[in-house]
Length: 298
Image 1 (cartoon, rainbow, N blue to C red):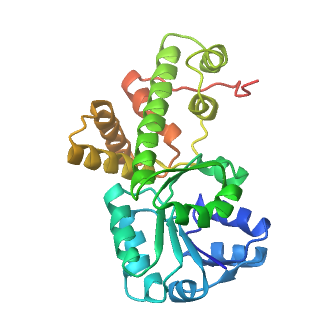
Image 2: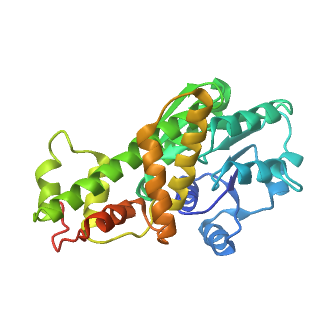
């Protein structure tokens, strides 16, 4: 049986896909409605200790590294009932140091640990097309591979413990700066008097085209900021990027500026919106609103 802890925007559709694929799951989340939904789909509910005791492998996808460590190693945590030979996989977005801490602590117990954060947002979680970035040992990667095959379109073991978390932070630099660039460009276009959706349609097939452009430009033009990837979660990730970059002496000036943009949006009360709402920062600077009645990218 597989233990699954975390049924949020990403975790719930991922767990549902595993149940649909025929895997037996024992699930846990603070949101009891989400747990009930999975139980109705065929999963079982269980406490952290029950998951550690009854499941051969455990997947966590939680808001931050502190919560991951508390769920694993806190009082009544999963690790209290884990036995040698089992595997824990953390698919949360955390720092490499947080992942390595879990790896070392579980290794002392004879338990494998894999850091395996994902990229693809809620649409990728629903479709089972996530990119899965893994750090750890080959044997633990092979243990988790059947689950990864359901959850994503690609899964790669990058290197030792912490490598997956580093890859996710690099991914977050690229994704978030890309969204900010798309936002700035569309605000520029509107301020110059050009229809933003037409700009998107004109450039999407060229070098400026990207998965981010295709995902976010139509959302921005439709004023759709329903979260697939909340600013609050990405704010946490970018904060982790800065902390890691400072620790290894890697200058990240563009990412540092992005963090301040996120801070401004935090003051404005936009943290629970999709990160397409980065556009609101640039809109305020230019005193325009990016909006188009034509939101069909075809």
